[in-house]
Image 1 (cartoon, rainbow over the protein chains, first blue to last red):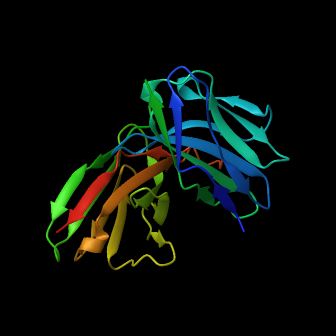
Image 2: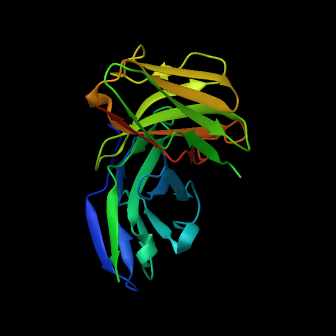
Length: 114
Length: 119
């Protein structure tokens, strides 16, 4: 069955340090992978996506993510965290074998401390 | 571009009344709109998919007579929670996709959500 796992409910990082928000997936076909960010009481904003090509994709606000096919992962990263990066982050995947159904992870709360 | 406006941002209503939430695409034509429900500290739950001019497709377990969805134009979709009860209290979010974004690698454009509290 198709699934997306974000193993950490919350990630705490000091400002200026690198951050990683983890995501692993399970699909039967080719994955189309997305990261979205949600600020309090707001809708979601698209950050970046992986469809094909270079495994390292760069997105908005200095974020990047690395697609690792062997580990079925798509971790979100940023070299130097900002307090303003504090938000809820969602990983999502479309499965080409399942009519491109969009499957959402549970979300990870990222807290950046000054 | 691709701005989605959702209104109201929050609403409090009494049990038994109905509440309408609007989702508008401001600078594009939204051929498809999605309605999600989000519980505290949980992920998004897709409630239904609506295509302009046709009936919405509801996900399993979502009562279509309780959550009425109308997508009468290319820029407006509405979700009406009928005979609301406290358990309907939640954060409702709409998202939209344009005809140009018909490929499956296109991201969705989200509204800012509506916080519904039923007392």
